[in-house]
Image 1: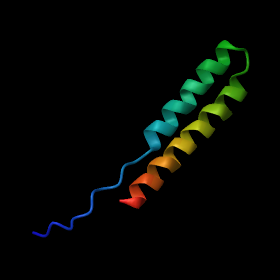
Image 2 (image 1 turned 180 degrees about the vertical axis):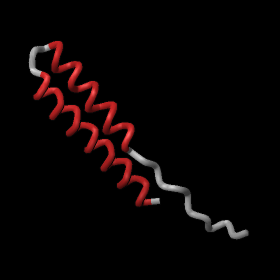
Image 3 (image 1 turned 90 degrees about the horizontal axis):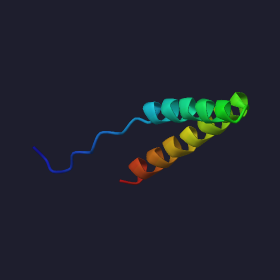
Image 4 (image 1 turned 120 degrees about the vertical axis):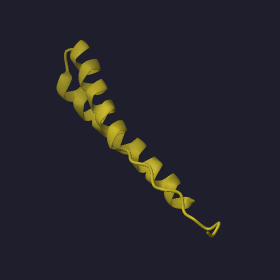
Length: 58
């Protein structure tokens, strides 16, 4: 076996889902669940993109 095996990529789907749900809950507590949904979704996508970018550099 060679030592040049590439590590498997990490998925970010769970992080995107959890941040979206967290955003809805936080937004609901503030009376703005739609804004919370968008903020949570945006945060999850940014974290997912950062994970992809970091994984791609390896």
